[in-house]
Length: 483
Image 1 (cartoon, one colour):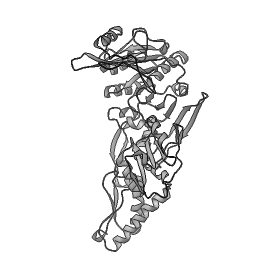
Image 2 (tube, rainbow, N blue to C red):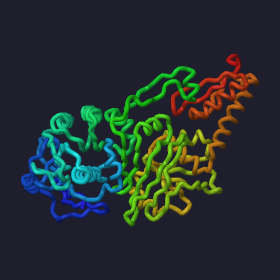
Image 3 (cartoon, one colour):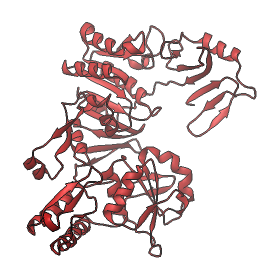
Image 4 (cartoon, rainbow, N blue to C red):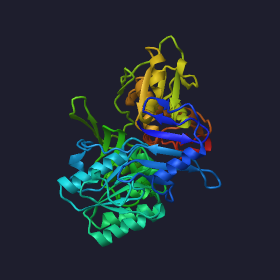
């Protein structure tokens, strides 16, 4: 069971991963809510309470007058052995940031990390426990955190101050924090890391890219700044003059993305991964997965400048692989259904690749279904109804590189064929310019393909320039008096 939910005037429910069960046939009353509230500890400023010496979390929903009209009783469990999949990383002494959707098990792993580092590795561990969710409710912490010490936080807004207090007063070797979510907490995390203390924390976001693009939390992974390049440097890089670069060294050495409780993506060098993302590249990473026999499977993915997709994942009895599958030859245009994917990026990739495809709102008529790995579970029922010829792709991130690579593989287009299209388009425009036609705008392309087009124009001694903003940036071949 995940949680028990009680809302005024509705049936009380017990929620499981795959079903919801009504606990009785009569709705919840005000007396029921008052009874539950009186049976747990006092609710704090974050509307959370607990049960003495347990890991359960009780959260209240209040009306505009401050009265409780709903209660969520989330089941807390001490699960041992959950970090053996990353124990080698935890014991390195490097700072680690855990990411993942709510309820995936980040806090469970934090408890186990605290216990292992305190009891097995014999390090001085301090847990900064804002809602008593890591160490349990009450003044005596739960045994799940072992010999680790626990500092309670009086109000959520004071978490950053308690983080600093832990370093200054108690000489920890490791500090563990759940849910870093404000700029003050991000600054406190950097202060802790700069003092040589190992910091293990969680933050809001599913992937490294989510944190990088979050203005509040981006400092945790180095931050982002716009840099204007000189003409020579921009030409050397093959980019526009204004680019994004990492602002500072990351606070955390390692980022771990939790896909599932026993399936993780590890970025062992956050600085290198962030630099790759800002250049539109796929970052190096290691995928770890616990097999049925308990062994840990590892797959290392090297950095690449090519748009790529993750390998497929078994879902609902089907294997959603990355093998190129061409659409039915009898169909003139391939229909693409996307969920959680940017429509603008998908349309741009279709235009740039020059493929016969259009986006559809009806997933039943789709030749290609594209979504994010985070949404895999939502598609289980739909996948059973798809035809055998429908290709399914689950991408790691909602980036242009991922979408571009997905379509290119689906239509079996090689890099060379894409380059040939860009060069042929530029050659045709150059011939039109030589014939006296005025300025000719080409199809929007990425920076690499635009560079090839500029080089071709230069070889013909024809002027060219790039106009527009990404992702609509394109080359203009000068014609007429501009030659």
